[in-house]
Figure 1 (cartoon, rainbow, N blue to C red):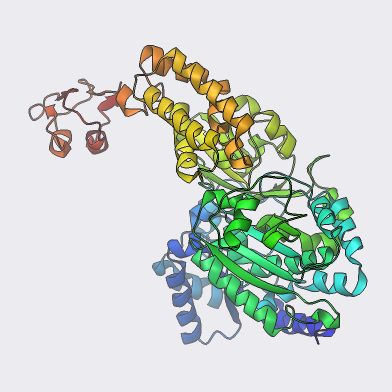
Figure 2: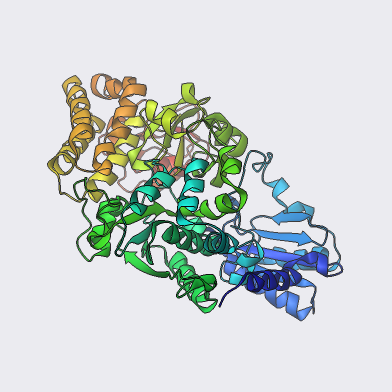
Amino acid sequence: MVTFDYLNATKIKTEAKINPQNHKNGFRVVVGMATCGLTAGADKVFQTLKQLIESNNLDNIDLAPVGCVGECALEPLVEVIDHQGQKTTYCKVSLQDIEKIVNQHLISGAPVKELTIDNYKNIDSSSLQVRIALRNCGVINPEDINEYICYDGYKALGKVLTEMTPEEVIHVIQESGLRGRGGGGFSTGLKWSLCAKNKGGQKYIICNADEGDPGAFMDRAVLEGDPHSVIEAMAIGGYAIGASQGYIYIRAEYPLAVQRLNKAIEQAYEAELLGKNIFGTDFCFDLELRLGAGAFVCGEETALIASIEGERGMPRNKPPFPADKGLFARPSIINNVETYANISPIVLKGAKWFASMGTQKSKGTKVFALGGKINNTGLLEVPMGTTLRQVIYDVGGGIPNNKKFKAVQTGGPSGGCLTAEHLDTPIDYDNLVKLNSMMGSGGMIVMDEENCMVDVAHFYLQFTVEESCGKCTPCREGTHKMLEILEKIKSGNGTMQDITELEELAYYIQDSALCALGQSAPNPVISTLLNFKDEYIAHVTDKKCPAKVCKALVNYAVVADKCIGCTKCKRNCPVQAISGEVKKPHKIDTNRCIKCDMCRQACPVNAIILE
């Protein structure tokens, strides 16, 4: 029987191991080993560190692998925390750097200043951040349940099972103002209460970990860095609604997250924090993984349910809603990873604490995956109401190479593009919807002056067409027709009538598609038409792509005054479209040019331009 004494004893024991204060001149050394870190070579960094620590008999060092620290562009990352709690972050650590870090910092106690994060970033991107969902990511070893317990893990589950009724749990979540972080922003507490009203019989609680937006990796980071936070929250949710069985639906394309979830579930069962009579109560809760094949449409809750049931992942008509008739026709609750990651802190710190952050209608914080034309790519978590300008410039560090900000796509394929005039917009669910975009799961792609907005709309619509389940005609046929029109415009064969038809189709699909994914599929087109219609017009009337991205509408040319006649462009052209003699200006035959860009990349003096 699990008791609070068990949690307290585990916490004390683990703190003694991982706290550098317990060792004279001791250090806690962590290596970011989420997918972003491993891709950059963090596994080799970790092994080399381990070997050097062992060979130097550094018994005062606690070395641990952790999840994503958030600075994805600067991986591999190594953080050293000394016995006074001072943290030193080393970025882009190479195997050659490790010996210097060990000898100079871990043995001699002097940080290697030339390798720290200050040499790579000129701003403190943590100043605006408040980490709730990401509280343990980059802090604890995700494969050690004891480290999770050390940071108050499973304390919230113990509290609700021994001190609170299911109704009280739902009331706290409802009062906190927590809204679903998966896209729609529906009240989490209200959703739970609707399911709880269905008395008797089997119920299910489900985690939607089928993160499929291009450029989105928030949920993956939580699962790789803090899997127990989701497990604990699902058990709390199961108690609140009366469900004894939970499922985590995750795409098989996330192998590391799957591996760490499986290990975490196994550890939770071994510790009797899952299974029968948890904390000595009558509450029993089982949890299983279900792997998806990576279909974007399975992010829609009814399609996800169909997939778990063994059917093809296709949306179902609503009503009935899953809270009344969901998995196996039983009342079911579905929330995404980030939503669950907020549950335990709310239970422990209270609804008022969570509701004190954010805006009137959007409480708490939001995790974003910041990518595209931005200096500091990676993960961030800021209070709702933080402006786009603060996220892009104060956290993201602005646009590289002094380029001009053009737009930011929020909400992935279901969202829309916002412009410079929207930079001071407080980010919350309602404000983004008013601007023909949406919060979505939290992907945020920044674009600069070199992005073509027609091309951006084409990219997202192409993704949606490929991922459409094909069940309803508006989505299956309508988005395909929209894509054809966009391709016609990009190729220089479009007309003003095509732009009109594109707009009409977009609003028709928005009003008539079966599910939310189909209804939001035209959003990137609608938002770019509203904010960048001049670019569409330039494509069809001037037959020009202002950003010089659409190949059919640009030509390559040599600036004679710049050309030094080095012949590099000529030698790199795969179709012999360039002519000229040594030390004399060259020329490009536009009729033969295939616009592969090899010549421009090869030119050492930037003498080749796009017209």
